[in-house]
Image (tube, rainbow, N blue to C red; front, side, top):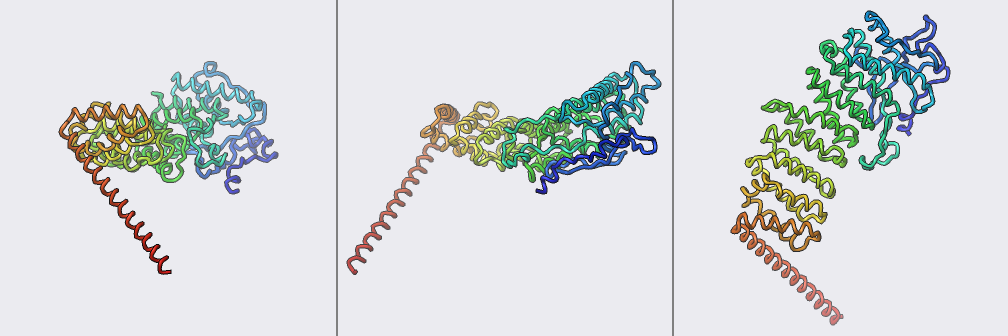
Length: 496
């Protein structure tokens, strides 16, 4: 019941909705600059950005929807004298602060089109570089952007249906109804950030930590178009505003921690990892301890959630980047993979094997030797998997020349570990493709070192013989117990 109350839409009263002073169009004595109180409802798992002051880079307040007919189109920039363009820019920003209801396509279509055209003009004005906008204009533009994009996200689809364990890949795609306006606002922000006219010393006053944090909150949007824009904008902010870099990394860390250890639900993990992929690529060597801790505490544990398939490609790229940057991290990464190796999820296991191959391809001999024993015990289990895709993917590791080279150098350790698994596949695996691949791998080891192969065969035969002896002894013991029990029963009957 409490969640339903929180999720409920707050509707203004009729007296408020028709009060012209609430739109900034009342008599001069009662005009309130077009802003109403900014009420933020925090959702349990999708917390909206908190309200902020006018100088924090956040939304100063949500400008209410004006009565029909009160918004009029303003002159084009090209028709205005150069000296008046900054003032016209501010007036256009005010028009773009108005919010519209997109749940009803027939409601205020004229005003919606006026705002869309105004946003297009603003984007063209910034992109053309026809005039460097003043500091006041920059501040008001960031406020307008904040008013439009910073909002409480609607409840996630799994929260609406109440299906806690629904597969994120199977959920219906949600598209933001206000995207015709929202896209242009994002485009304006992106053009402003990438513009050569934008002075970072001035812009950082408005694109501050509060603004960046609210931007990161929006990555939980279910609309992939919005997440794509957010990814590009945050990446540009990271590149242009060096002062924000440690803060952005820390904030992304916190999102990952909450996702891994609390919710296991977030729509933007793949996009955040995509940004991190290029950030990791730019890390200087020797790598800072902070970055290594990020790998151990955030990236490796991201293998734990069930929804890993949604973002695994980006995660695998980040992990591989770390190993390619510093080959000594290979042992840490491989042991991390083994720690989170799935036990009952075969599709996830196939993903892990694919990632393992990429990591091993960047692994040097010394690091391979540190982890090869637990690694090949896990590979042996995969070889005997009844799910043919897991067994097949494990056998594909022998198609990689670098991995075969590492195995060949350490065959005295690796072959005895997996020899029994290979023999068992040849004898009893149900899938013909797996059987054929196993025969090829077995032949490869035989050609690699015939003496070692024969020694492994002999040891396996001895183990099997001992196992048969133990089994025969167990059956004999049970038979003796059964005979003794039967004899005692007969004796009891005679006594009675």
